[in-house]
Image 1 (spheres, helix red, strand yellow):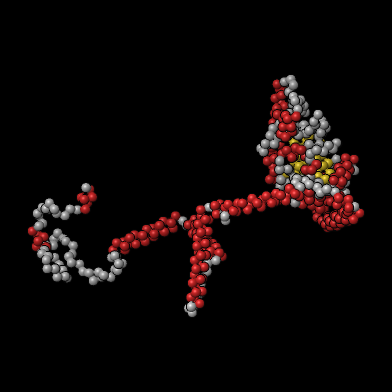
Image 2 (image 1 turned 90 degrees about the horizontal axis):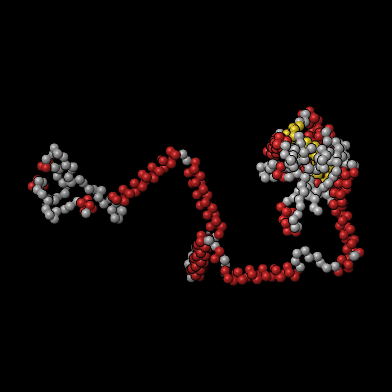
Length: 477
């Protein structure tokens, strides 16, 4: 028979693998409970009273410690387990509660196994009224007659919260839990409240239908709790007054820890001196692989790496196209610099004056690349900060410059000399309908084979067969 408070998927797989036709008996089926937003099952004991104390964003720190101390002093005075998220906070609250006269013990990962067993036994026997613990005590411990559970912070998961408060209200008994919940984890509290409302609704439906063999899904009382501001201020001042004593206790514990480590080292050295031969004759512990297997694995790895280097050369086959081109350009540049250096040395050997050579190093290349990248990022940033009007203005300016370059390329001659026709004069002015051909201005040049009267004679005559035709007509053809 296997008894377990939680039955995970691994246990189910083990059952399917090892058992034949197993019978499962459950106190409360998971089908009766709702699930939180994260998909965690919310299964709470029916006789458990849940209380939530809201901690606002301005009350974090000493105020939260004061709230917990006030609850331990006034409401949860005996058989209480207080859960914390960190070992440091659990130990600090143990010191504070001890200075305030509360009998308490601590259970977390910084303790040795002997200290953990002693703390658990003192809480079971009733010597300690409060057990300050981390999630180490949230599962797997059966401590009878736990009256209350305090949560210094709401856990980040609903199932962790359920396991914590499951330390009380066990085996049909009642119990209380109180949680100091901050603003960031209120959605988890709402998930628990929604689950309780769903269970209450199903319970009413079950009673109304009067079904036989149906399991009721009761949920305990959930209510809000407040701590008066005057009480919080009183305990905040008390904790502030205890700060020097807390530091003294922590310093004494640090010294005791160093003494314990020194004693362990001394005991170890004494054992080596007394039982040195016996210790040396023992076989070495081999956890996963022996020493020979480790050496052979290292040699095999070296051999494999050597084969890869021989096959792949310098590893250029693994480079991207861009990196390969960059490496080739760098090699060519270094080769060119080496040739220039040799030529310079030969020229100096022949008596030529020494010239200063500018060698491009990796640092110079990287600095140039960084400057280029910085300039590109600056341009991108400026383009992102510009308005639409600025973009339109810049576009129009580029268009005007492009048009100006195009016109200058058309009007310039083949040699690019614009001063060849500076002295050119207009031979004929623009024709006008009112001005006759006799009144045309005379040309500054002496043309001998031009007769303006010929224009009058050929004005109204048709064109010949082989006469000049326009380019547009040729284009149409």
